[in-house]
Image (cartoon, one colour):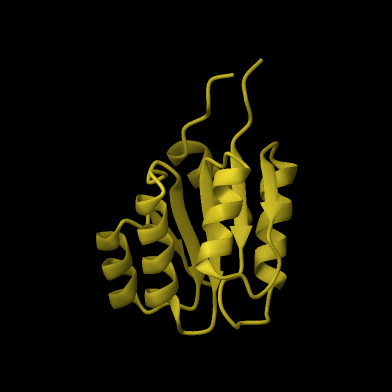
Length: 134
């Protein structure tokens, strides 16, 4: 039996708007992936710890607060420190195009902007996150 892709969906920082994160989490789950939604106000440390404990293949961050550069960077740093840089980091939010390019240079695999469909997110995750061997 093929193992399912495991994704941690997280809302880092002080942003309290999580409807989009919940919609993405549900869509990924409905597409057959295992999804852990961490809830609001998670620190990068909590998110990385959850991803490692859950043996996640990917972390999806939803950032609307404007703190995306700091939060994504810290998650990537912590993954590297924990020898877990193989966990794919992607995300979404209201992020300027110039910052998207910078985030990709840091190692963020993809940023979805407002208007991205759940179908496009599912398709991207399936194409870019390795399915583990069971």
